[in-house]
Image 1 (cartoon, rainbow, N blue to C red):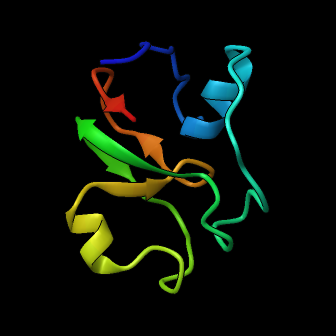
Image 2: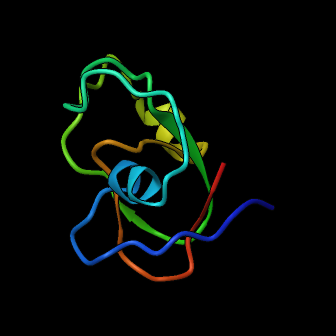
Length: 80
């Protein structure tokens, strides 16, 4: 299913990925470009601030989020 990475309280998913040494594509880091879009497999997120033009409500319902803005709200989240 993928790797499990620790994420400190208040830390974004993207920040946790980068701190782990893993490489991932990202762009503006401000929620405006959509390059860092990922899909939540399980768990819950605080989606943070982002442009609705980059992440639609339909995409959110399908589990997508922007890793530069989203923060886990529980420890057992899985992403792809």
